[in-house]
Image 1 (cartoon, one colour):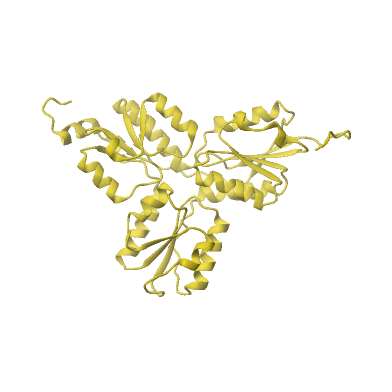
Image 2 (cartoon, rainbow, N blue to C red; image 1 turned 180 degrees about the vertical axis):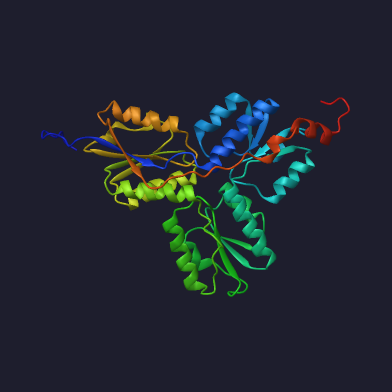
Length: 334
């Protein structure tokens, strides 16, 4: 773009509300901090507690150790399961390794797990809409592996086969794009008219609210910056939703220093939001970066009020170090 000689339009920022931490993430992050305070380090965490680089690095500095597999946790230690949930086999592995466990699975993910178990008991074929390889999908699938088929988007529907088209139900990963999920559901209903829906929506309230806010500002924004990590499903979806809502350009960044000056060429309105696992300090960094470049006027785009909170995992109210020691039954108490 050439240099404009005319007076450039006023620069402004549209800041999405709600954004950032959802109740499940808040609970999981606090759970790690509380466990470290209560039991001392190390606290092992299976997989990233939430999909955010900064959060993981901050907790590592405080003494959390992130591992990919339960087998990496030394016997007799404390292990925490991430907000995305784990399959029953992981609980079994932990018991075999004599580990004291703290389950920080988001209650909204637990709800989907329970639905999976119930429909499997009733011998339904369960079509799980979600992204292959995502921790949450692996955990949910593990609740009823013989009954669950993964459907990864509308284009996957053609390959889906079921035993009895009259006993089919769909469930979904909690962090998907609402619109794309409904597209997948419509395609599935066309193929299986007897398909039943889950008793309540599986896509979590926070994912939906953040997408609604981005839709509202996307139409007005030349550029949307989504603060979030590349492996965060709900953050990646926000970029897609922004572009779908009419934003000219949209990018995902972990930190303000990843923003490229060139993105601001010819831009007068920047939309800013953050994924459900992003602490507000990172958004503040982006606002500061923009403010230094003349984007000082910030308007809030409010889509919903959020007041949901979840109580901390019940295991934090027990003496887990003693339980781990007892399980290891090591007379020296090590």
